[in-house]
Length: 138
Image 1 (cartoon, helix red, strand yellow):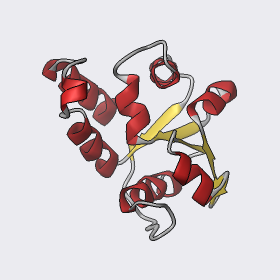
Image 2 (cartoon, one colour):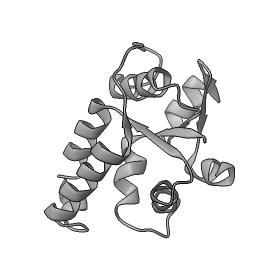
Image 3 (cartoon, one colour):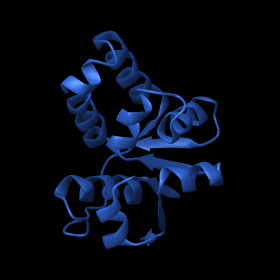
Image 4 (cartoon, helix red, strand yellow):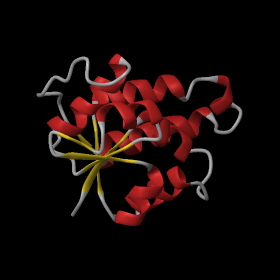
């Protein structure tokens, strides 16, 4: 089975609408089409992101809590055993790449254009793809 790390923006956006590519990816994960790898960093960043007013206007606090718990129990929460530094455009993106490399993910799914351009299509064996490209793979 293929495995993937979804960056925080994909996870957060996927909570809003099932018809968008991020929502379709979340549904595919729930349907068992791929193994989702996360880390404590990604879960904490997601929880922080979902507290922003935009997301609070679209989903309830209970839905946020339930989604975080689902990720904690149904994804593979991997420790960051491989440190990535100064590879991405932002330090938090380095931690997301660390998650993918540490968890030996096949894919890192991101809509972050600067990250895609700077890091390239593959980093230490992890394919870095857009949500639309990932949907074609699964």
